[in-house]
Length: 150
Ligand SMILES: [Zn+2]
Image (cartoon, rainbow, N blue to C red; front, side, top):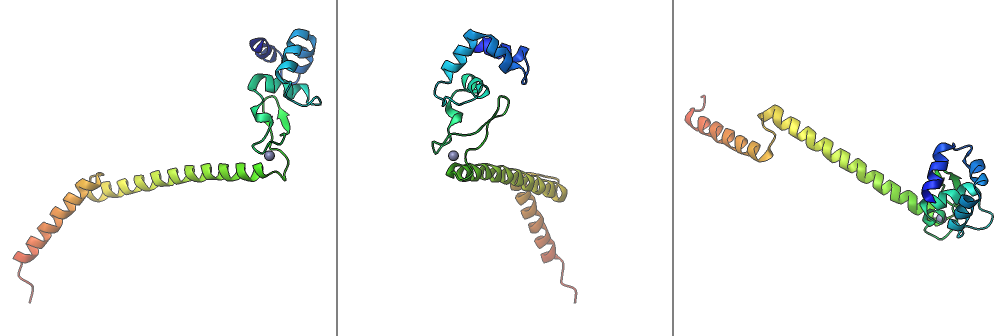
């Protein structure tokens, strides 16, 4: 039945699928049965969505009913006063910040590698430390040998 519904939507369009679904009594009945957890006033488009994606999204984390947007868009947030909006917002910001952090870390690492390569022709910090140590030793040795001017 699910496949039937999917192919009906594919054959139809986002504007016409409701009309086509209403002509198919068996499929319509299945959609209504699949979405029986929704309140009676729920629109058919929402019922189709729930039949396809499950009921989980219909209710927010705080147990409130969310507003349905459209078949291709799913649900919106629930009431503006609901706690879940703030929670979801901070979760999204957290994910966003983590992503930014990741990008920033990569950027800094790349910059550091570039600097190392430019200065020492080597992007491995351990090898660079070696090179630097050797250079310092050589310079120190040279200084020791050269008598100070005046
Ligand atoms: Zn909520």
